[in-house]
Image (cartoon, rainbow, N blue to C red; front, side, top):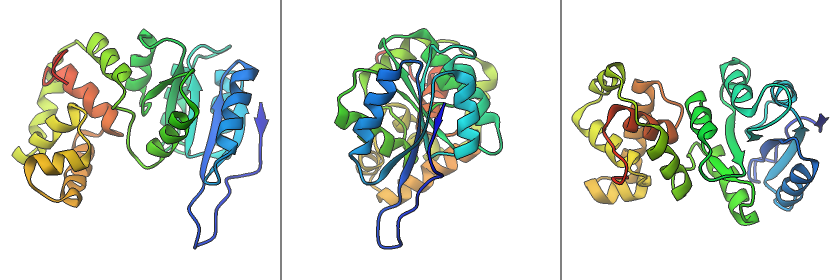
Length: 235
């Protein structure tokens, strides 16, 4: 396990730095991601972990904004590490971005249910890795890539009555926005679709997440599939 100094903050005039922990059992993968992220002035890698247990420990110590989490690691795997990180009151607000070698890995769905904010392929282009880190740190989720959509379509097929009942907490407008978020539309696209301002859409999304006790937009999609609101091919 490798740690760095605590999260760095910029001056009031500069952008806030996004702190990152990289968890992967392959040294070359960690080194490659660190090298890519080190080129960005607004991203600071504050630690590395080679096992799931180390990932949990270093996240609790450094409290980064984002964790890049591999699935298959010695000890506890990335899914259990994600679950423990997000269950810990000290790190419950950390964003976990799952890294995988395959674009249809059944374990990734379990990670999304554990609270991960999305996932990336390990061979992702450098610019997409950087964009993904910034995206999840801003509170968004990695919904756009077809990989996430195909994964959810394949594995989120269970229909639970309790899941469907939760949607009754939403107002008519919130239900409409929920459906559009579940189909992968951005706030801007939703605003154009329902003829309101983007700020209004953000307010609706925030209320939806709060009422349904969801972390982010990825979990909106998962819930939509589980409730049968969205079916494979619709999103």
